[in-house]
Length: 219
Image (tube, rainbow, N blue to C red):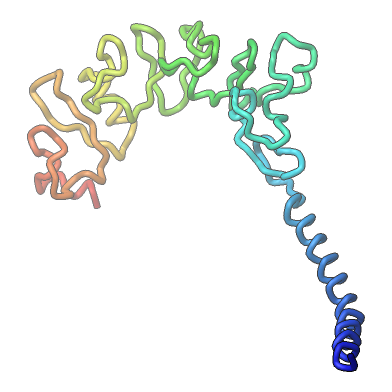
């Protein structure tokens, strides 16, 4: 009986000594969790999720997928509702799809030949749309094609304009880090990046990119 009493007294003594330590540690842990779960930030150039302060790209707003835990990235998206007036796509960098989702997409996605808006609004009235720097317009359908798609051996314009001799010469001249592979066949022109020159592999159909006289461009 005496042994049990001694053990009980020691347990009580330890609890009295250690209780303040556990209490303090718990408070600090909660405070740290509170601080790390919702850090203050002002460096978000997209949409800031409430609660978590997670920064998501603006084109994730109204894209039909819930990315914020509280789902605010998919709230008031219908452009026809008065509630949606509090949100607009940044006009300097994004295109507003309008309609049910009112999705924001990067300007470069508009008139690129692939519908990104639910309604296809980004591929309408392309003849009135200005292509951005680094793009050229296909005459056949007014879509904007990146220079990097030109002369790559694949037709991106309906009539193959992006693979024509005139386009290839223009693209290679405008981009001084591109090399136009010489060819007597107008339908077999290729414009490659300078870093492919003299890399041990033939990227031009006739291997011109591996000739010694063209290697100084790669240095």
